[in-house]
Every structure is written in structure tokens, then in C-alpha cells.
Length: 294
Image 1 (tube, rainbow, N blue to C red):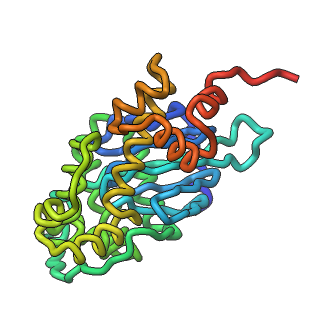
Image 2 (image 1 turned 90 degrees about the horizontal axis):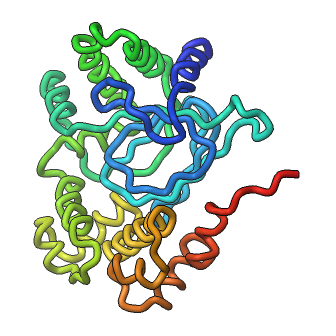
């Protein structure tokens, strides 16, 4: 398995310092040296080199090389990566991702005659990649340089990757993604609304109704899927979007606060500091100030 991991690393070293398309459907790769806070889409991530820490609501997850994890719904995530050797520029964090398509998983389950129910699956865990899963990923990534073969083979290998994951601890979560009537799919309808209307105040009762649940059941299943309450989800989404605006757009903190839905700039500053460790302007300044050379 080590030789396969080494070959995968060599391929992924071509990636940029962001999630980079590979030309293969739903497959991306990254070579990173810093944290990346963002809203993750439903994906399967395979870590190849370095370590990654994800803060998802109340959960803190740590991932090492040759492990993988599943993000089941759109989640606002704070991420931090650590390279294996900070003094060596050739050892960045390397990872692969496969965007999860509910239709592909559903078709695979149908072909397998897999009718198992998938309620109560845990959304947050790290799993060691099996040699079979690594082998499937290697054959997928070799197609990056074989576009004529990729059109035929990539969909088959995608199904194999999903098949291997279905056999592991994340299998129940993948089944929930595929089922339109699962609790996860019901919660996802509410998440879609929050993401579209994240600047607006809301009451939980209409969201629970949109998800087809009682308020108590909605709170329970929302927390199980996201590690957050609906209000916490909205707050984290607002703060991540505010941080991105502050980093890449010439706006002051108060203007950004109001643009993401806050009615009080001071409340925004307090909650921003609680989430990112320092007030908005100080936080952004550390990314924009060039490092002093010794």
C-alpha cells in the first residue's frame, strides 16, 4: 500500500494550493500549506500526506495520512492543516476528494440489491483506508493523464470507490445520502433554506415543518448531522462568509457585519473573535502582512 500512496502523492503534487479540478467528474485534489475555512459540499476525502484538523460545530476531528472521512451535507468548517515536515517545502498536505452524488450512490445500492435502512448513522469519524480503497483511488488518478480512457473507466472506478466505502464505517451515512426519505435528506432541505437565506432571521418551527419533522426531532437530527443547532449553523456560515469578504474585498468590518445579517457591529466583533481567536481586523491583518524575513 505504501507504493500506491507514494504514486498518489506524486500525482497530487501537481495540484494548486486550493481544491483543484482533475478533469475527472467529481474528483478534485489539493496541495495545501495552510488552513482553509469554507463550506464543504458532501464529499469523501482521502488524506495522503500531512495532518488535518476540522472544527465542525462541537466536534474536533483529526485526520492522518491513509485515512478518509465523509462530509454528509453542506457544512461550514474551520480547517487547519499540518505538513509532515514544516522545514521541508516538498512535504505539503495532500488530499483527494470525491463529491458525493446521491443519484450515483442510489443506483449503486439498487444494483447491489442493498435495501438496508440507514437511520442513526454517525456523521463524524475517521477511518483507515483499506488497500482496496487505495488501489481504486490510484487507478482513478492514473486516468488524469488518460482522458480518452477516463470517459469510460472513471464512472466505473467511482462506483468501486463508493462500494469500498459502503463496506466501512461510513456505509450507513452514504446510504442516508442516497435515500430521499432519510433523516439526513430531510435535514438537508432545511440546510438548503438556511444557506439561501443566511442573512435573514428565522424561527425553527417553519424549518422543522419544511423538513417534515416535529421541532424536537428536527433539533435532534440536525445536531446529529451537523454537530450544530440551526442557529449555530447560520452563525458559523455568516462568520465564514464575513471572513472571506474581509480577506478579499475592500470593506470595513461594520459594513461586512451588516452584509451578512448582523444588526450590531459589536456583536459581530465578539462572535468573530470567539470563533477565530481575535477581532476581525487583527485576524485579517495577519494574513495580509508579509512575513518578516530573518
